[in-house]
Length: 152
Image (cartoon, rainbow, N blue to C red; front, side, top):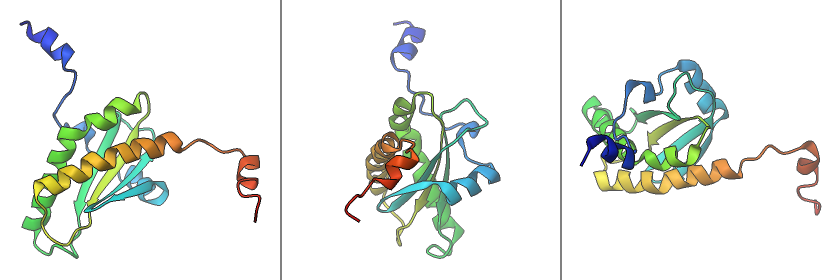
C-alpha cells in the first residue's frame, strides 16, 4: 500500500510539537483571568477560545502543584503523564474545533501520583465536556440577559 494514501486515510498526528505548547505569558494570564474550566477529577482543565500565534487549533500547558508534590521528580512524572495522554487524545478536540483556536491548561489536582489510566480516562471524559461547553457558549444580547429569569 502506498504510504501517502495510508497517511491521508489516517489523518491523525500523534506528535506534540513545540508550537502546540502554550508558552505565551500573555495568553496564560488571559486564560486564567477570563477562561472557563471543567473539573474531571483528578484534572482541572482551564480553556479559552482565543487567537493563537500558530496554525494549530489548540495550544496546551500542563502543571502539577508544588504544594502537593514537593519533589520535582514527582511533578515531572505527573506532567509527563499529562502530556502523553493529551498527545494521544488531542484529536477529540481537533476534530470538533473546525476553524476556532483554543488555549487550554491542564492542572493535576490530585494528592497522589496517578496511574496513567486515571489521567487518560479524565482526559477522554474532559475533552467532550469542553466541546459541549464551547458549543453552548453563544453571545447573548442584553435583552436575553435581562429576561433570562422572569420569576425574580
